[in-house]
Image (tube, rainbow, N blue to C red; front, side):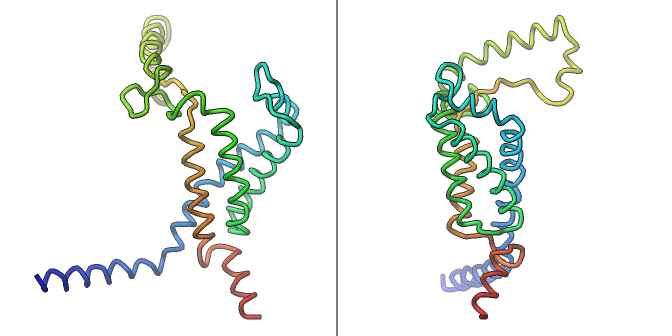
Length: 201
């Protein structure tokens, strides 16, 4: 038994040596999120008037108050968030407004559709909307197989139904929450080098 304990301790020591490169985890989270927020923010900015109209319109939009202000804040939070995450600057600070943006998106845009981003009746948390999508997708495939070039249409990937649930927003929120607590990581971030400089001075 003591031999097993020693072996376990030895294995744990070897495992702990990986902490020398633990900066790779926050770096991976940052780089994964950069294009998501950059693209979301720049698209909003390119179509700012329609974005603001969508934020404010109660009939076909979100019906939010102060739509121009909220659209501006969401747009520039995402644009600056993408830049800050890329260079690792003020990562813990920018994570907060980005998390708020993700919560707003989850509750105002995606909540009514349930969990799943892509409708899959066989997956957990499939709601009635997702269950109904199976027949619709099957009918769409049958129509395309009979009247369209189905092989060409599916050559870039399978046909799916977008459920637009909270799955992606929740995932990005969790990733940002991790960055809020662990920070940008060592070596490959401005936060690390700025903190090192200020500590020295």
